[in-house]
Image (cartoon, rainbow, N blue to C red):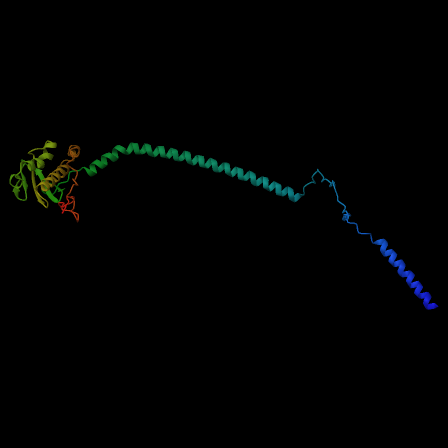
Length: 254
């Protein structure tokens, strides 16, 4: 009997447990929507404002600010001094530049005189002759002139013998005619290289330079006539594949 009573009690306890489980479990509904538990949100939360009145600065902060102000003032003063120094330098340079220009303007005549006396001075040898070297094409002439009766000797021969063509003798006498010194100087020269035309041009060039060495005041007339300029025109060299510098060989069609 006791065993039966215990089994009945156990059955009743199991039945109570089953009922409680069914009560806790809800029936499944297809249209039911699972809802998550709402989390509390904080909206329009006002934060406490900071005190608008700043706290009084400490002694250390005041010292730092004072030092910063002093540094800024010193920098500004240094900048002003630098600008004033640059302005003074520019003004001094302008003044010195104008002074230098004035001094150069004052010295210009002296410099010109010195240059003229240094370059255009009479140059004579021990025999009182003026010497110069003349060149034209491949010819080189050494020329000496001295006051005389107008005699011209070329390579120990008279000019009429060495330059038989009148046009060549006319070329040689051109410098004397340009400066109005015809028949007033004797000329002795040696010439080599080139042909007669080149040699005549070399002698004329040498006579012009010798006249300049003997009388520097004749330079303007000689220079304007082109007698002091070395004529650089020379024969153009022959090219391979050509008969001369530019002359081609005769063309043959067959």
